[in-house]
Image 1 (cartoon, rainbow, N blue to C red):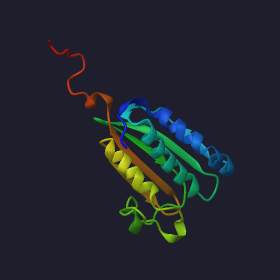
Image 2 (spheres, one colour):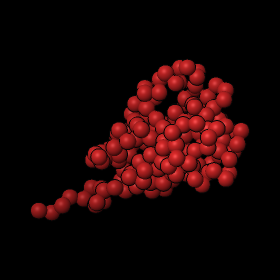
Image 3 (cartoon, rainbow, N blue to C red):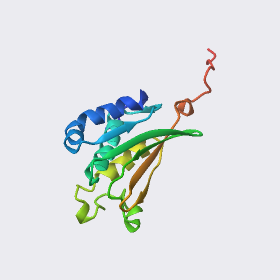
Image 4 (cartoon, rainbow, N blue to C red):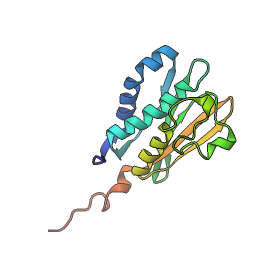
Length: 162
């Protein structure tokens, strides 16, 4: 069920995800580096799920001590948020299908629905998600969100006449 989108700090959604991943982070001795994140319009639960899936995968598919970097860049009328790891990477022939449900390879393990859910969440928030990856070097998942001001029906500062 879709909840109403509300202005929220992406860091809060990430913190919820990191709390849910606490055991995985501790057991793998993962380092999660977070740069400042913007405020967006969104569903807090869905955005926490998005981060939980992406950060969880980054930890799960890293062979050594995982290092996950999360940052946001101003991309004009959108925010581009990236979750980067130094894990096993995704072979080129699988990259275009990585967001398809049940498309994971046998050796990768997992349920095959996590990234499909990520794509659906980003889509519901008016954004896109993509992956860049090199086998043996890691993957960077980048998703975009419209900026807060872009979602207003009228320019800021205008007052409706009565």
